[in-house]
Length: 211
Image (cartoon, rainbow, N blue to C red):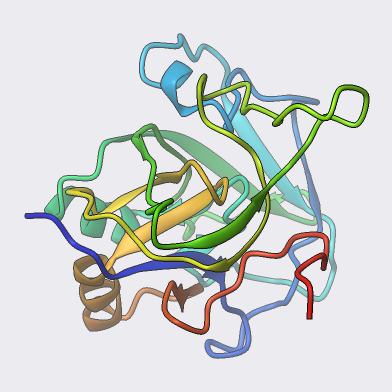
């Protein structure tokens, strides 16, 4: 079933009384995957184990289901929502420690969804494509050949997409369907917030939309 109602996924700490930022370090300087290139995630070999040491002494427990949409850390409860809705992803177990002591109660994962889609109806939307400074040509997305990069989108009219969670090519962010929003709220998934892509939605990463 295709949906036309979508929301951008974000970390909502205020609603759930969670820390606004979880300061910490991973046990590797980089990951074995490029989160912004979802096509490569499905088949890439992941051989390392991953740990996250929380360095903020005020955080004693990580009681959440979703954190950081740019490199998501999620719980088993979050993954169960994805499974029920047919989301395609890979998950990597993540050991979390607090001041060097392992929190045995936390069952967390690095979340690697690998479906992507173009959501913007270009004929009905209002936007500006980014340009290459040296040539003036439209800047193209390196991860999605043939797709332009957008400076801003003032009016975002969506196309129907038959996916419940995916990388939105135009926004370079994770987007979810109404079904995902509804099921997440019913399950009490902590930490995940949703920004509807509706008539008031604006994509303006550099504050360039003309007044």
